[in-house]
Length: 166
Image (cartoon, rainbow, N blue to C red):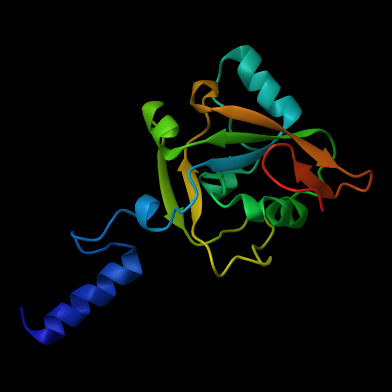
């Protein structure tokens, strides 16, 4: 392969998110944290668990995937950027790529994306690849459920057992 062809192939792979065969998969390369976290409205999660059905977030159809983060330090930033205006009790689901895969659910690591109509312009978006869950979440794939602490004005303060209070 000539240099020009190699360069074109490399640029194409970068644009479409491919990597050379000897590169580690994105979940290994970009995941320095062992768990994936998804913030969920408690009533929606409880309904999925009670009905033994797959949970899909309200913006799933618009977004095309279920949002998550692998970095627990970003959970409160994410919550306070996207969800302060959504009232009610919230929970945080803790999973792994492996637990989701065991349920037949694929995860890809990509740059941040909007949630519904809200742009992803919060602190930390340029430094992370976020796990996007290509499907809903089965209750059997969740390893732990954490309580979320909020103030009266909707500010997310802590995820019990995961984050420090702000």
